[in-house]
Image (cartoon, rainbow, N blue to C red):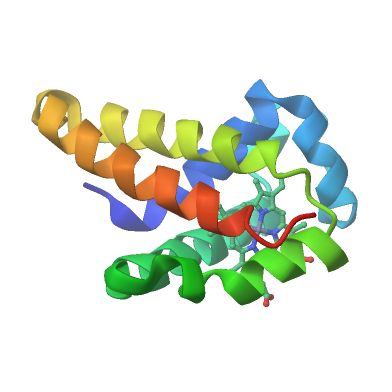
Length: 129
Ligand code: ZNH
C-alpha cells in the first residue's frame, strides 16, 4: 500500500464528495474543482498531517481518548470543525485504503480499520459541548 498517499487522497476525496467541508480550508487557495483539489499542495500537506495524527493513535492504541484530547479541544474551540466531519473523513480513508489494497482488503481488515477509526472519531469528538 502506498501509505504516504493515503492521507492526501482521503482529504481530497472528502473535499470533492462533501464540498461543504471546504469551508474550513479558506486559506488553501484553489479548490474550484476535483482536479484543482487533487493537485493542491496544501491539501496534500494537510492530508499528511492527518495521517501523522492517526499514527499517534496507532502508537497509543491503549489510550486513544487521552491521545486525542488536545486535538479534540483544538478542532472544537479553535478550528470550530463540526464533529460530523470526522465521520466523513474516516469513510474517505476507508475507501482509499480499500481501493489501494484491492482483494487484500478483506472483511477482517475492514473491521479492524473501522474499529480503529470509530475510536478516533469518538475521541476527537469528546471535547465538544
Ligand atoms: Zn484536522 C489541523 C488531525 C479531521 C480540519 N488536524 C489538524 C492537525 C492535526 C489534525 C494533527 C494539526 C494540529 C496542529 O497544528 O497542532 N484532523 C486530524 C485528524 C482527523 C482530522 C487525525 C481525523 C481523522 N480536520 C479534520 C476534518 C476537518 C479538519 C474532518 C475539516 C473538515 N484540521 C482541520 C483544520 C486544521 C486542522 C482546518 C488547521 C489547518 C491549518 O493548517 O490551518
